[in-house]
Image 1 (cartoon, rainbow, N blue to C red):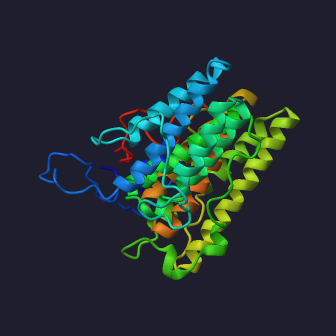
Image 2: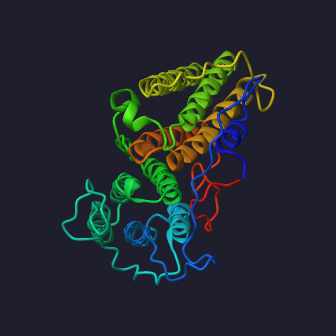
Length: 349
């Protein structure tokens, strides 16, 4: 398997003209039921996975209540069904009509059997089923997307990656359903949470954070090209906003690395574009390409950084997924990972 740093830069489509990248390897993970003699070993992800499935079943029930009046949202329901297939295991599926979690649970603990995701989803689903509206379903998607992030710390790296991707998809669904503010940040900005004891990955290497920084260097360069080719003032404003967001994210990763005692990698002297950018149309495609590929970078980051830093990567994934959609990127059920119902969250080679 290629190291994530190399893979994510190849996916970004803007390659360094020279220099090496720090390599790191994906954490080992064996899916439940794999033929390696561990059939009887309990799945440590089962409590998290079950809560995610309960919340997904509540979403499916809400969609089924709304679709007779709003069939145009059937593609969103299909995405949710694919999320369920990716989250499911060999364990028997719960009855979709129940869709409940642990009564009275709280999201902050993120301990097995204790999360707000099932309760919030079930409550909103009941309301949506009684009086189906797009606003009720948008609210449910938003609440569920946020609740999934509460389990990032309790999940294995591959499952955390999948949860972050599905959460980002829920945010996109909420936007499509009319929610103007689909999700709050999962954690404070990196600059306010960075400390030498928590920012560096296990083993003492800052490689994953350097990869994220390098991706942002490339994005800043790319948006310079985008802005130079746009002619519509609205698009130019959007490009400036996106550029500022990537500059801020770049600066935050630099501070995080410096706070951990590492020297942030500098930007390259130049980057190679994935295709010629000669007019406004190709500039818009480049913006969509940059954001789409950054979702891959940040989905990888969720699975490779220490547990306390996963929300930072998930936030970045969500933001890039939103910007990719705004720039016209093709819809995907799994932002940042392979778009397939069979996906288990394991990083793609």
